[in-house]
Amino acid sequence: MRKPKRTAKATATPAPKSAKAPDKKKINSVTLSYGGKTLELPVMHASEGPSVIDVRKLYAETGMFTYDPGFTSTASCDSKITYIDGDAGILRHRGYSIDELAFKSDFMETSYLLLEGELPNKKQKAKFVHDITMHTMLHEQILNVFRGFRRDSHPMAVMCGVVGALSAFYHDSTDINDPHQRMVASYRMIAKMPTIAALAYKYSLGQPFVYPRNELTYAENFLHMCFSVPAEEYKVNPILARAMDRIFILHADHEQNASTSTVRLAGSSEANPFACIAAGIASLWGPSHGGANEAALNMLQSIGTVENIKPFIDRAKDKNDHSKLMGFGHRVYKNYDPRATVMRKTCHEVLGVLGIKHDPLLQIAMELEKIALSDRYFIDRQLYPNVDFYSGIIERALGFPPSMFTVIFAVARTVGWVAQWNEMITDPGKKIGRPRQLYQGANERKYVPIAARK
Image (cartoon, rainbow, N blue to C red):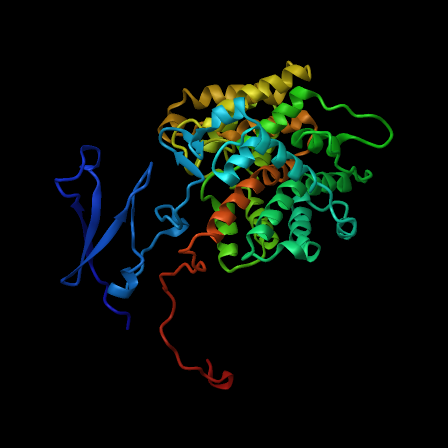
């Protein structure tokens, strides 16, 4: 027999009246009533955003777990890196808003900020850029790993395999207990990810691998490795390089999303950093996460023309139809995605410099955005255009096929994964991740020999 279900209710205990005025509404603890008993659970306050109830002693005291599929109401860690307010459409890295970083900073400076907690001065930035640049080359034998894949392999599959293999080549930076080795591993991954991504792209085309160049910026180097060929000189357009750099900034980190949580969970077992990032890449690959921009572009292509938008939206609204509206809405943002605002402006800049004035996909995108901001169906469900809606169009305009969109996301997100991994490793309260479950299976049964079974 199953044990009878327990009933419990929670009440909040307010802060004492002597607290300072701004803190009067803060709650110090929550009292849980269950089975005629009570348990007081402390409340931990955030510098911004929701406070959390500390339930670490819940099982020991009550024999019960909390139930939260998808962990949408559970804080798995405390962090100082990224703050999101989905209702207000806010995204900040270390206190700096994403639009300021996108328009005033660059990816290397943003990377330093995520890793170190502060913006660098000129000397610090110069050293950081130099150190990253000196790690962009790959061990020559790693090229043999690429050649082991089929030519038609998805670049994300190649990324997963090659990044996971890095620990077999860089043994001097896998000791997670050595701060210097952690730093070297972090720099190596940030530096080598564009090289790995570009080589995966070149391999899919059957073109020669292009090595990194030290005189180019991070974004310029990536574009050069992707699009140059030995037969002729390739000059990177500065506006396109800036757009690429901005894409990297907008995707650099996004709090405890699926791939970041995967990196932290893998890291909690003390796995080497390269394995942790490979795990993050695998998680990012999903169409509900990093693959969303590829899916959004595929959706626009499937619509085909502006005239087909209304029939497509009607199908998307139909619960019995399997058509999906990609690039709209967000798990966290219940307002306009702040990254989408930056990406929309960048999209027009890129199409302008490339002379693409009447791109059919952009026309479809603009009409879809117009509908999303006026149609009651979209408004009631808060389905606003997100960053994936525009990034796929930009990357297509730059010359990348849809299969590379998630790869570019992985290049950008690596610095966020590395920053989160470092924060987790140095957390004195770190524990190996071990989510619990609500078991709904069979009770204990006796084994019946096969001859006796009906």
